[in-house]
Image (cartoon, rainbow, N blue to C red; front, side, top):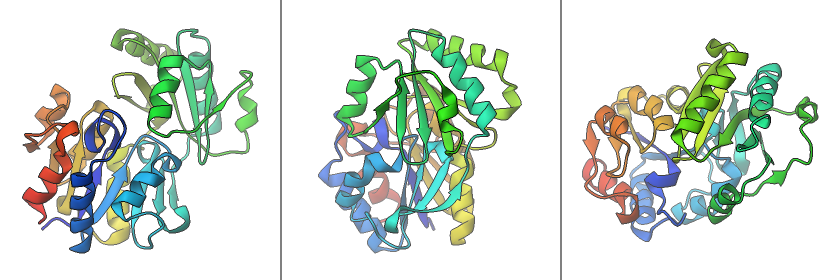
Length: 273
């Protein structure tokens, strides 16, 4: 019945230390051998999870796909070929960045199509990224015009508390028309700004249409609020055991295992193999 699995990475597929378990990798390989697409659907850049795709036996493979930047970019894994680019309008991205840059507590990330830039880096945040193999460049100044000729996929801020992140959302929406933005929270540390209408769910459906797969033929697995759009868009929404309450409430199946105990292998064994 199910032809595609779209899956979040951090705190869903990956262990807390950023590693991919052997059992999850083996289950993914078994599913793809049966002809089921396994699609990483991450807020991160595709450049950060190539080693994980290697372990899944999906790296640089034709007719296999990945979604990055909360739906901002859909790639065929072979040569990381873009098949859909859902970038932010430059002026919208600039306005969001300027609000983030004005907050000295915030580490503000600018994701271009291929490179992550960070303004005002914070050690806790950069340690988290480095632990997951995420490479980045430090912005030495706050001149956003340096991105004028690039695709800006999303702008996000790392802040220490949910109250800080909600305040950042409100601050951005006081300067930018909220109808131009999709706003989500992730990993217990980020508030994320994508273009309106672009999220993990819209990209899942978009890829499904390209492949001739209906939404009801898709499984989506996640743990946090930026995963909600893909859970709501598919036939079988799954929360891992460590998912936040609203994700669990949106799921038709909640795994017994958490992300540190092969939750995705549980899903694949139950619904695919």
